[in-house]
Length: 201
Image (tube, rainbow, N blue to C red; front, side, top):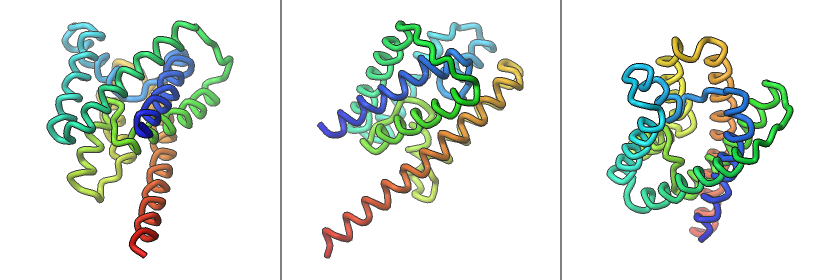
């Protein structure tokens, strides 16, 4: 139940951030939607259709490589995100913040959202699926850094589509939230190790 609450709360932060800050200020982050935009420019298959296909493939990969627990929690995470994003987007809420303030606030909220989901052994059904799999295969691979690198790769491929201004905003946004996420996950790991030592003693 604790994990479920963390997933719901985490996605409320992510969904509201994307609806009220990221989308209105056209901040590209190199995630599933960005990848769908790139593939649509190549194939013309449709952004929504491609986003759904990518999401389905990521869920399938999650099931194969991370197991049923991650899979079912990730489905819940995906449903929660869609609910909160659509709810907050329908409100047409405007923050009246400038670009810099929006990027910083969105970075903080999304880093927290990712942290709550990942610490509950769930994914947001984005590039974090790949990052978590890589971390499970090799503990030396940092989840937050892997997410940053994967987002940068998507942004690089989308340079001609998004333009350099959007790419710069995306690079800054991705760097800040992945840096904050790294600190949160490292802190969580220290807390877990401390608890284990207490139990053993």
